[in-house]
Length: 502
Image 1 (cartoon, rainbow, N blue to C red):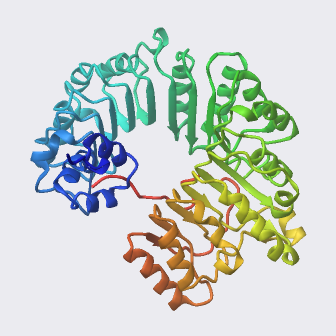
Image 2 (image 1 turned 180 degrees about the vertical axis):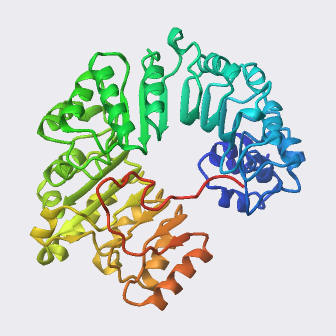
Image 3 (image 1 turned 30 degrees about the vertical axis):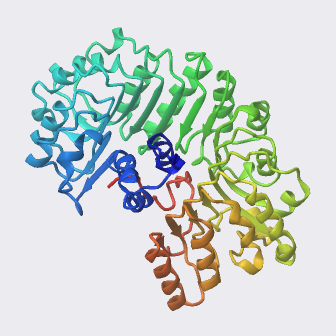
C-alpha cells in the first residue's frame, strides 16, 4: 500500500503557503496539480492595481472568490466598478481622486472589514454614507482628504461608533455635528495626520471620547497644530483618560523630556513607544521611567534622540526580551563587546548605526556580526551610516561596518528571514563573492538599498544587476545629510514598496 507524501497533503501545503513569498508560490504552483490547487488561493489573496498595471488579470473572474485584499492606486474605471469579490475583506483606494466608479466598487462589497480611501469630495457622496452604515462587518476605516456635506457629518460619526481602528487625515468639516454628545467605545487604535490647527482640536475632542483607546499615532505638518496637539494629548494622558493606553507613536518635533515623562507616567503599561523625530526628548527622567517597562516593550523608536545612544542602546538590546522593532541612533561596538549578550532574539526590524574607533574595527566588527547572527527572526536591517551627533565627530568614530566576507559577513548566514537590508550612506567595497553569498544564504531577500561598491561605479552597477536578475530590487542612493525634524522611522529613509500582491 502506497502512502501519500506529506508534501502532497493539502492541509500541509496550505500551512506552508502562509510563510512563502509570492514570487516563490508562483513557481511552486507549477510543480504539480496538487501544489497548484493548494497555492492558488494564496496567490490570489492580495491583488494590487496601479498606473503601471491598471487592468485586471485575464483570469480574474475565475479566481475572484479567493481575493481577500484589493488595492487600487489608479483612478477607478467602469471595469473596476463592475468587480465583485464575494469574500473581499480589505479595500484600499489611494493615490487617485475618487469618482462614482470607486463608490460603486465600495458599495458592491458589504463584506468589507477594512476600507481605506484618499480624496473624496462631498458632491460624490449622495447616499454613500447611508450605504456604508449598512456594512455590519466594517471595523477599520482610513480616510484622507475627505470633504463632508453637512448632512453627512453625523452619519460619519455614527459609523465611527462601530469602528475599532480609525485613521483620519485632512478631513474637511464645516461643523462637528453631534460629536460633543457621542462616545466611541470600540475604538482601540487611532491614527491621525494633521496640517491645520482646526483639525488638531477636532481630533483631540474625538480622542477623549474613546475610553478604550490602546494606541495613538500622529503625524503633524503644521508647527502650531503640532504644539497644540502635543499639549492637549499630554494633558489627556496625564489625567488618566485611557486606562488601557499602551502604544504612543509620534513624529512630533515638539515633545520635550517633561512631556514624555508625563506620557509615560500616565500609561499603566508601555508596549510601543516611538518618538523618533525629537532630538533631546529622551532625558534621564524618561530613561528612569522607561527602564522598569523594558520587559514588556515590543517596539521602541528613538531614532534621533542622541541621549538614547551609546550605553543606553546596549542596555536596551540586552534588557528587552519581547522587542520586535527597534530604532536607535547609534551603538558603540566597544560597548557591545564589554556588555551583556543581547536578549531581543525575536527582533524583526532593526535600525541602528554601529560605531567603531578606527584602530578597533578589525577586532570588534566580528563581535558585532556575532551578536547580529543571533537575531534569527530579523526581516529588516538598516545600518545607515551618517549621524548629526557631534559626540561621534569628536570621538572620530567610524560609522557602520564593512559588509564583506573577509570582515565577517559570513556569520550572518543565520538571518534566513532577512527581506530588506539598508546600508545607505556607508562606504562599501563588496564584490562578486558577497553578492553570490547574499543570493545563496539570504533566501528571503527582496530589497537591497545602498551602494554595493562606492569606489567602482561600473562594478556596483553590475552587482546590482545580478541581484535584480534574482528578483532582488536595489536602490543606490546619494549621500544624505539628516536634519532636525526628519522622520527616522523604518519607512523614512527608503520606502520599501515590496508587497505580497499581484
